[in-house]
Image (cartoon, rainbow, N blue to C red):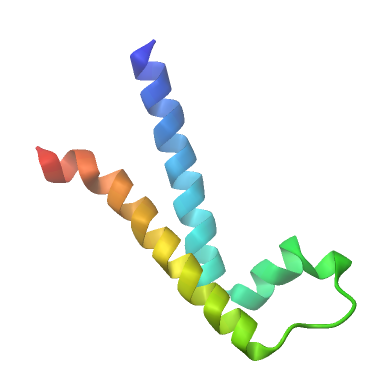
Length: 73
């Protein structure tokens, strides 16, 4: 059972890291997918810059957590 939990956690981290990396690289496209359908107008450019920086931080945390078992060996 612990092995299955480990695989689920690893899969969650991989999806989280991939989504965060995509949001960091293409913040406008990520906004269109997640929030654009309900928006009346497009947010200012500063929103996308801050969003990309936050997503880059989350991608770095996800990558760090994915690589943690290999670093600790």
